[in-house]
Length: 107
Ligand SMILES: [Zn+2]
Ligand SMILES: [Zn+2]
Image 1 (cartoon, helix red, strand yellow):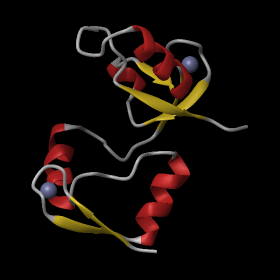
Image 2: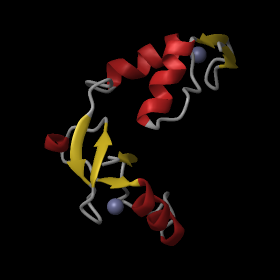
Image 3: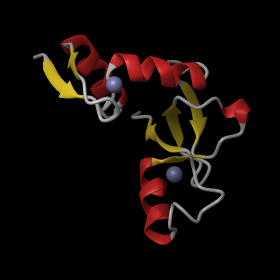
Image 4: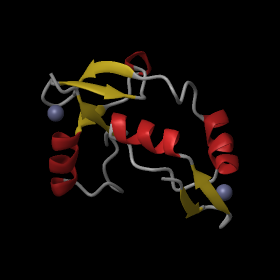
C-alpha cells in the first residue's frame, strides 16, 4: 500500500511507493521523513547513502548492517547498544556518540 507523508523539512507531501516501503522494512530502516527533493540534497552531502556494509558493532562486536562505511571510521552501534548508550549519555554532550544504530544481522 502506498503512503503519503509530509516532509519534515519543507512541508511538501510526498509518496512512498510499496517497493520503497518494503525496502525500508527489509533493512529495518525507518521510513523517510523527508521528500525526495530534500533527501536528494542530503544525499549530496553524504557519500554512498545506499550502500550497505556488514561490520561489527563497535560496542559488542555483533555483526550489523549499516549504511556507514567502516573505512570512514564512524562509530556504529547495534540497536541494543545504541539504546543502552543513549540511556546513559546525553546525545548533545557526547562527542564520541555513535552515528547511528545498525541492524543486527539475523542468522
Ligand atoms: Zn522536502
Ligand atoms: Zn552492540
